[in-house]
Image (cartoon, rainbow over all chains, first blue to last red; front, side, top):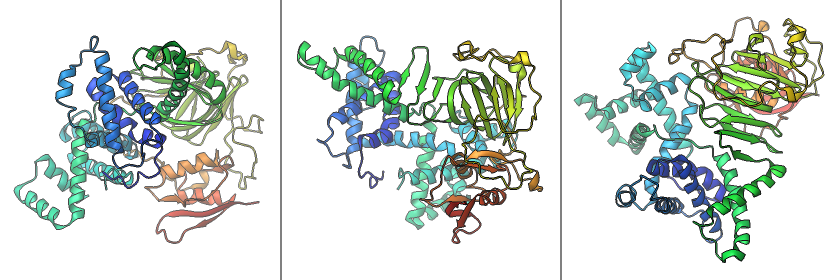
Length: 174
Length: 407
């Protein structure tokens, strides 16, 4: 993950860059959109209050945000333990044990892909979504859209090519 | 392209023994090859987990964040006398209450955004315009002093929002879910298009940048008027007026006013006036439907619905193919800002329109162009009003290096 571009960060620039990855990370664990938003908001409130005390341009800022999100989330779950059906102990032990910011990378890439879908031509985007979001096979898509499997393949590789370009442009890929 | 297909085949496990070997050799040849492979692999893996990824509008969240930060600062001050310390848990509700009152005072100053319990979101812009993307992909540029109300989630069979003010709306195509924009006086129904809408209690003015649209007096879908690319129409209590300039005028003299200026020009009455009794009540309070219900009854469809299956449209080119007879294409009047954005968005792939960084122009200047004409024609029309200098180092494309408004 490229970090060369993280100079002159502000709370706002970090917010806009990491809000969606953090939100989706938290939401994938607690599966409650409003709570997830609250957790991420709280993370940035803490960052805001620490302004001046920490270096926003630090290469470890991503891990810092991730760790704060993880801790804030665990606090939030503890608080609601009684009403919540999330198994806190399992959460602790398993899926969120990793403590480094790289755990956030998949969410950074996924949210960036979602954002970048808008640059695809409508047909290409549709084929990509049918395959990746709805799980149709190339053959099923071809039949459904009355086009050849070859056309589906062409569109898919075009989608991958353009998405990679976009992710490089936004320095997600080096 | 070939390479990408081979990589995808390799990743899917469907490659033959030979292809796999070739792929591995190719990868070991250079770091660039290797990183291309790794990137595609990573996109492939991550995009298998996109189902639960939501994109939250960070502009909206940032505004919510700012009012939270501001109010929590005042909450600290208020907390101190009661128990001396701000505790996260116990004061949460209290803080939120303070946040609400703090937000309320912000409305007056910079406009505010809040969440209503009925699952609608409302946005009032103050002095600042506001850009956002709805969850269906529709993009809305809301001008200053405008109001937008939209559901957090669209209904399954229709998309509906309410606007009082000025907005540019780039509607995501979805033939199975017509998009309706309600305003005090009118409704606008589209299937996927880009439009400019200026709606108030007294008039609605609509410019169709691209696509087909039907516009109707609020609550009277049966009186809909069908518009197409380039059309500009205004609706007032007196009925519809077509503002689109007839293309015959060879030299459109520079008009200083901003696009849909209310003083009626001698516009051709293209459309038969609706019968007089049709005219909706002039007072804004009588406005037919002030709040948009999420799901409109499946009323008689005004716009012919394409088959609701998953758009097997013939390659949806953003820009209609140019007709040979260029003179026939009607011109429309557009703001420069809208027009340039449109060119940038629709022409980069086809014939490569670019604007060098730093080129300045007045976004509110208006221009008469045939937006569906070929780029060369559009640029010629632009040159009627502007002196334009193009870069030489851009082969087969049009890159504007500088542009200056003619006197």
